[in-house]
Image (cartoon, rainbow, N blue to C red; front, side):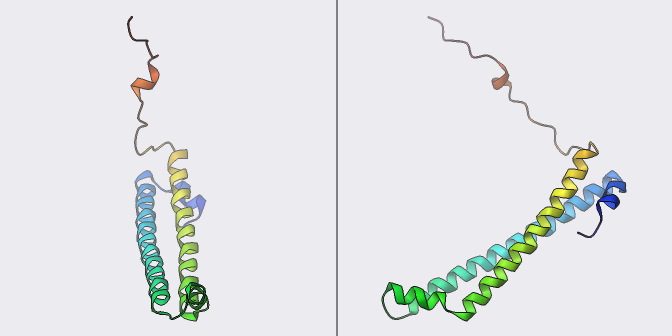
Length: 122
């Protein structure tokens, strides 16, 4: 996180909302990047499985022992950790906004849930 909780608390409301928008943007970008890498890794695993000779067990073993796939898998896990840290930043800023009373959207009330159900006329 680039700012401490005390700094976030002392920010004006517009700057706090701007920090929230920026954190959400970074989170969305990193999530897209991580999901893309994860899909590439799955594609590489499938490609290696199909192109390897032998029965299913031998093919799975070839995929499991591939150093390149292991390295890529580690990169995806590291990206996931970084993404989790960004999500924490977003949640902290969101909590600050809520604690200060600046609600983004008013809660939606369902009128049908408030009315008692009346039986059909007989």
